[in-house]
Length: 381
Picture 1 (cartoon, rainbow, N blue to C red):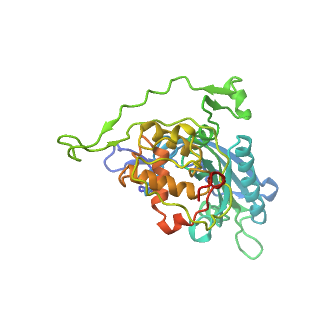
Picture 2 (cartoon, rainbow, N blue to C red; picture 1 turned 180 degrees about the horizontal axis):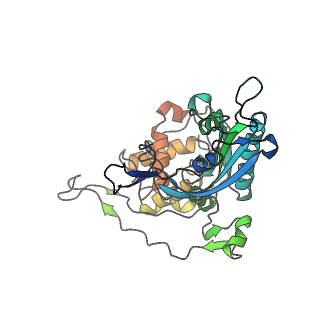
Picture 3 (cartoon, rainbow, N blue to C red; picture 1 turned 90 degrees about the vertical axis):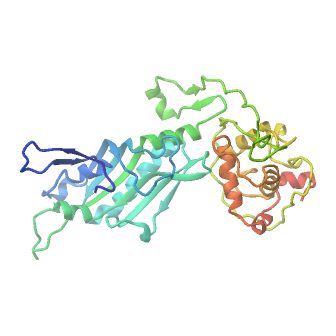
């Protein structure tokens, strides 16, 4: 387990005895699984339903650099776990019940989500079937895992020798109980989802079920003022990389608190062609743009870039949750302004995420995106 789990080693005072090694648990499923080791459980005593509350420690090996911002993916966190021991013919029913419990929990918190039935090729050796509940994260513009619910049938009970009824049946065969586990709440990830989906320009809305635990508080206002806009930085100049006369590039910026968007709408893009930007003057956002009015004059200023980044904090694309010609137009204008370089991720995180998505598409694919209603009303393509 050394690649996956942390361990504590206590050296023995007796040189003839090996060191005492203890592993830190990654989930309360592990110790709960061993509660009834070596026991014969009578059918009348089943199902046994446990709720595990524990601190979890994970190395997150193989996930370096993935979802490392904030507290979404950390090495130590608290988690509430569901664990069920039942008769073999009842495990599929219990599995659906555990998924439903997780769904009801996140519904009560107002967090949009998807439920994914994991394909067999992605299952580990323990699980016969697994559901992932993925919450919607507006800041990333995508769903991310909050819950994993697995039916391990008799995989764990065989290792623990936890049998059903008598030691053996009339034919001399052993019958093992089935074991299931499911996340209810990984605290840090749930906090992230609450903050993103409950955010408004003035603060954070507290979901109704949590109000009693917050002393009756229903809203947490932001207490710090937004920092002033950073000064413009000039790229190039005397001795600079760009030599004399280097052009200005926007820098700085800030994350903008935004209302929580609805989850992405279903639907495929159409086939209408998008216009291309050919103007030699400072890039202008089209009249039919979904950008706020203050961002329309130009994307060559910090204020314009900040407005675009703030807009993309709410949605996956410039005009909503599906790509349109609006995205193609703004991408070409911004590409011309920044000279083909990507936006600075620390200053414009939402724009950088959107930019990467745009670059992953070919020019032909972007040209096939449909025009928006606003563009059609304005008479643009």
